[in-house]
Structure formats: structure tokens, C-alpha cells
Length: 574
Image 1: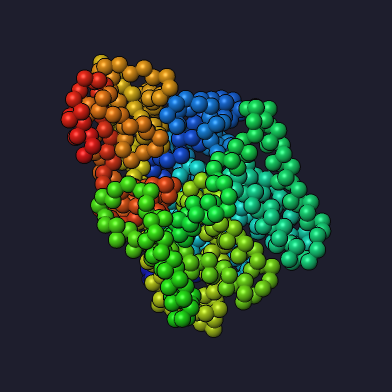
Image 2 (image 1 turned 90 degrees about the horizontal axis):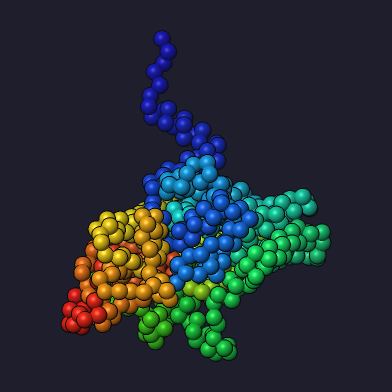
């Protein structure tokens, strides 16, 4: 009679097989982590990518040749979008196979997420040991999980970014022009996905120069993305009469003069620290393992002092609206906590460079600090999407530091390391879930408003964009055009209050008929100004996500009635 296999023995055997085949383990983990969010409604800038993908299916050579009402009036799409179209082409191809549903398109974006994690695993092997740990540290961060549940360009760009670095480092070490040419091609594709990937050209040039101590044939590899950029420049010039890359570069208006610039960006610097620490929360929780007591006190004390000074001066919270559902003090505490984590991450990169002083360290420190400075000083706003590119580099730096401080001569994970992984993973999933609930509430509010008001005899309009606009227009509703819509008495206007690019409707024009409320996330949110959360734009809040009593999504439904007394508008103000 054959011996009976005990269940725990079978599980142990399966686990050993997965450890020996890490790509299978990583692939299964990524899919399991993202499956709960495949049905997430489109929200934020997702509609822009979906609409462009629909245009590509009809007119493949003219991705932005249509009009859209995104800023309150109808304008050409090429004036609205600040991203190149490769992610939209990917969406169009996926939709051609699987359809346009949320589940179908989110499923297609599992591939870029898998590519990021597989690329991080391979890249880590070039810099240190424990590639599985670095891969999990990249996956289990709030910024990666949230970004992987959108259909925007960020994760696809990061996948191309990581693999271009892999091929470039391998090519430089092996003196392989073929690998470096493959890296150059991937850089070109990354630039056509998101313009920030242009930073790869100086980053990898610096790495090769430091490694080789001279210029060489490797320059040929970096000419490939330059050629791609030039071709893109010419194509967009021919299609739209202007170059979209230059439009994106001038999107942010800088103050005149260095003093004015630094003054305007002082608050952004602290916000970028806060976003770095929060978006890469796993690294923040590991800070006690990375630094000795005095080092931790110096980093934490310095960051806390800077945060307190900037908060006290009004450079951080002065531009935000009233706080509802949270106290100002609690928001300030969250800012300081994550700012300390952000300072620890920057110090981690600098410390690695001071300790090793080699080309690998230079690559990692330039990768991290360059991304941070872009987010803090040069992007139009601080957001999670600008922090995302540094996630793999931070994970590698964490492993290198942990190998130096904790894991040397110790094959077992210390309990504190396990605790940090668990706490970080739980937080990342909670943040992703909060963003999912936010998107769901936006879709539900659009559905409820449309079913109740858009089918009546009165003319119906709506304001607002993001997911609210997507689901409104999918049902045939028309967005209010500030320049061309002629409002008449009796017209109904629906305005979501937690949205962008909406025009205030004064008491001399409308009267409130109903305030529709939909419950979304209740104690943790990614995009609610009343509790300080602004994951997609720090113009909404100085935190990437915030704890507090989150107000519901609200839509004010008003009726155009010029003779309504102003006193009746008080309900809308409340």
C-alpha cells in the first residue's frame, strides 16, 4: 500500500518548489494581489486613456484627433493630454481582443505589473542578493498597488524603465552593444509611454561613464531613444501643428527668479518627502532596522524639525480648504511621520553611495534623488505617479542595507523584519482598497444621478470630470460647456463636489434641488481634500493617503432659476 502523504508535507513540498522557481512565485503573488481590484471602475485620468484608445481603434494614425471637455469647455485632445500615446495603443490592442469592460482592461494591465516585478527580480540579482525580497518590497507598496489598479501609463512606463536598466547594466558589464541597443529601444518605448522616461538617457549615460571611465560605443545605444524622440516630434508637429513633448515640458509655470522659485517650492519639498515616505511605506517601517539609534534620531529629528517649521510658516496647509472629519493636528502628525520616512529613504540612497562609491551606487542614488527632485520641483504637482518610478531602486537599496546591517551571517529573517513586511503589506492593501471604494462611489453617484434626473423632461447637464464624466457620458449625458452652453430656466445641473475643473454656480443662477450622497471609503482615503489626501494631485491634499472620518461622495443637483432668493442657497453651502 502506498504511503499516505500528509497535507502539511505536500504544502511544504509545493513551497520548496516555488522557492526554487521564483518567477512562478512572483507571478502568482502579483496576480493574487491584483485580482481583487480587476473590477475597479475607471476614475481620475483613466477616461483620457480609454477615449484615446477608442480613437486609435478607429484612426490608428491619429491618436489625439478628437475633442474632449476636460477643463470645462470642448478642446482638442492633443491640448488636454500631457502623455504620449503608447499606453493608449496598448489599451486599444487589449480592447480589440477582450473588450472595453473594466475587468478586461485591468486584466490586460496585469502584464506590465508582472513585468515590473520580474524586472526588479532580475535587476536585484545584479546589485545584491535576495532578489525575492526586493521584488516583494516593490510589489507591497501603496504606490505600486494603487498605480497597478489604473489603466494609465505609469506602470507600463515603469516596466519598460526597469527592463531598459536591466539590459543596460548587463550590456555595460559584458561590453555587449546588442544588449545596450535593446536597452535603448526600450527607453524609446518608455518615452513614448510617459515623457519622464527621458531621464533614463542621462541616468544610464552617467552609469556607463562612471563604470567605464570613458565614452565609448555604448553611446550608440542611447542614440536610439533620441532618434525616437525626434521622430515623435516630427509626427506630432505634422498631425497637430505643434510638438506635444514641448507642451508637456512647459505645462508647469515656474516663477521668475530663483528666490521666488525656491519660495514657491518650499512646501512642495516637504510634500514630496511625505509622499515618498507614504507611497513607499514599506521602507518607512524598516527605518529602525536601517539605522543606529543616533542616526535614526538625526534623520528623524531633522525631518520632523523641517516639517514643523514649514507647517508653522503656513507653507504646507495654507492653500487647502476646510478640514472635515479630521483635526488639523492629526493631519500634521501624518505629514511629519511620512516625511521622516521620506527622509530615511533619501538618506538610504546617499549612505549607500558613501559606503560603496561604485557605479551601481551612483545609478541607484541618481535614480532615487532624480525622481524625488522632479516630483518636488519640476512636476506640476506632487503625486503618487511621480514617486512610482523610484520604487524598484528603493527596494534594492533596502535589501543592500539590510544585508549590511541585519541579514549578514543570518539566514533567518529577524522578527522585526517580518513585522515590517506584514505591516507594510496590510497598509498597501488598505490604501488600494480605499482607492477602489472611492472609484466605486464615483461610478455609483453618476449612475444614481443619471437614472433620477437625466431621463426627465428637463434639460440635464453635468459638471466634473474623472470617472464621474466617464460614466455620465457613457449613459448619454452632456457635460456643461462654459463657453457654449446656454442655460435656461428649468435646466438641471449636477455637480460632484469632490472633483476638478468645476465652476461655482451662484445663488443668482441656481437653487439646490437635492444633495445626493454615496458612501465610499470611510476612514482611509486617497483623494479627499477634507482630510488632506491627494494621491493623484497634492493640490487636493499634502498626503498621499490620509486617515480620518472620510465624508461621502456628494453630488449637488441644482435647477436653473434666476429669481430664487439667495437665502435658499444656504443648503447648498452646507
